[in-house]
Image 1 (spheres, rainbow, N blue to C red):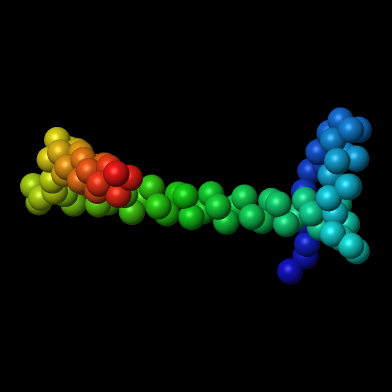
Image 2: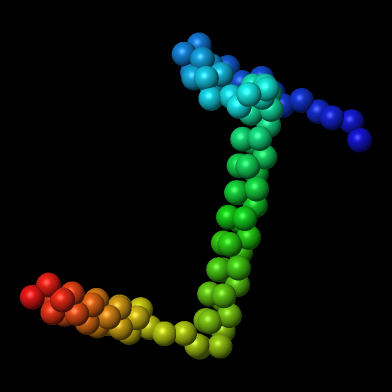
Length: 93
């Protein structure tokens, strides 16, 4: 398979100097840019998959009528927070 090039990116001279200052020994600016782009592509793919799974879970919960009401979740969290605060207050006495 043939390789392709990414479009050139214009940056201010001071930013280019900053980029060059963080290169690893033997690393080229092109390698840094490719690595950064690859990392961002992976992040976005994972993010899209996370959102997709979340949407499926929401639809499934709505379809089955399952789940827990937001007020109930918040009440449970508030109770846990209060218990933790009381425990902390007893420890500091």
